[in-house]
Length: 177
Image 1: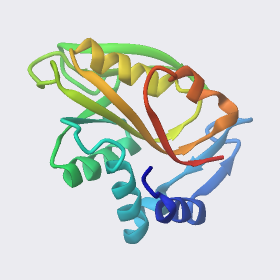
Image 2 (image 1 turned 120 degrees about the vertical axis):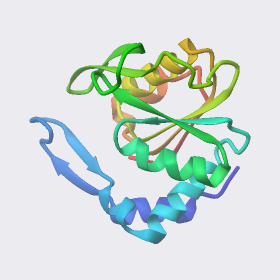
Image 3 (image 1 turned 90 degrees about the vertical axis):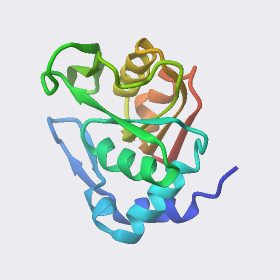
């Protein structure tokens, strides 16, 4: 088991919580202060990279996952694919719709030659809430022929049940609240 204590400390110390955002009843975890702190960002990226050192490609979830995924891919020497919100990529695309704690959405990746077939993928994002986004991401990259070897997040909100939804995938969260 990898020791993620430095990352846990940074996330706990630097995360800013916003009540009733983006709508009433939602408590939003803003990890921007973690990303803007050089040491905090470094220890978080290192901890996420340690989750699956033999990964071929990082699937980085729009938008904060892009920051993490790029760092993790650089650390591992792997590729990275940006999993985008609907309407951000030119056709053709592969898409997967899902529900999240405050609405519905669709994710997309290019349907063309991005090289996922037969490759091992680590899905990376900032927060695990209901699991809808991460489940959709995993299914989306699997539809492109990839094998999801794990999911890694910075922060897990346990009360929202996302871990149960992602039960078929190895899951690492650096901090659980």
